[in-house]
Amino acid sequence: MYRAMESERADALFRDPFARRLAGPAGEQILASMPQGRRWAWPMIVRTAVMDEIVMRLVKEQGVDTVLNLAAGLDARAYRLDLPSQLHWIDVDLEGILSYKEAALAGETPRCRVEFVRADMTDQAARRALFQRVGAGAKRALVISEGLLVYLTPEDVTSLAQDLSAQPALRWWLIDLGSPALLQFLSRTWGNQLRSGNAAMRFAPEEGTAFFAPSGWREAEYRAILDEAVRLHRAPKMAWLWRFLGLFASKQRREQFKRFSGIVLFENRR
Image 1: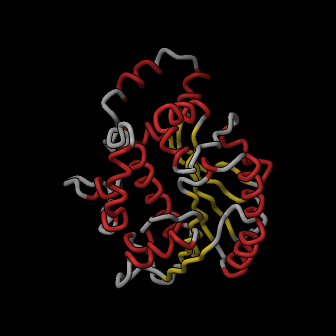
Image 2: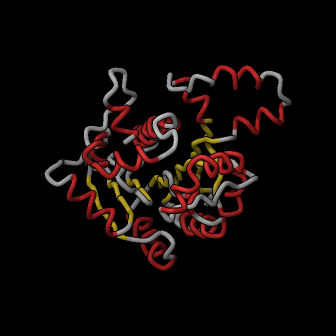
């Protein structure tokens, strides 16, 4: 629904002609039921736009030949981005989600070679087999896990990170990452709705991106959501006050605030 809202603006950061169809009436009802749901569209819209930029840059400049999109949900990047036809794009998610998505996009032509894989990313045996297959067939692969890690336990994230880094062809990993302070805020705002939907938020490491280093991943790029929102002209009305107050904070406090929520590109140290 957030992608649909953005796409329908005259000055849209991206155009997703499939978003409203994919969201359907259920998506509209979910958004309407969320406290301040429309008010908090901006970070999701910014996340989409920034990830689009990073995906396209890696494909064009780094020769990415495979994209492994974990917990892909109703993402339509393979259908809406200007991707090369020879790119192999793999959407991975649960049976019900992908079947719904396939039906909604029936008759549409993707921009590249698309494969749908039914798998649960908490099933270690299934995901290892998938990663080994993708790693054997790719030369320079990008992994995306947008909106996934926050719902996993730290132990599950560590296991996933290790399984990914074990495949040298999986060169980059693109994620969104929040801080403990963001997790507390979201729990207060949307906690009841998320828990009732069996989607409680769990993962927000105190050490930030350093959490992933022992599992073989090095931070290559960090984009703070608020900074990107200002750059893209999607910042909330109070952003100027937050940035002003930041001028009087300590260097450590400013860094913590910058790492409140962001998009991270990792490189595989293997």
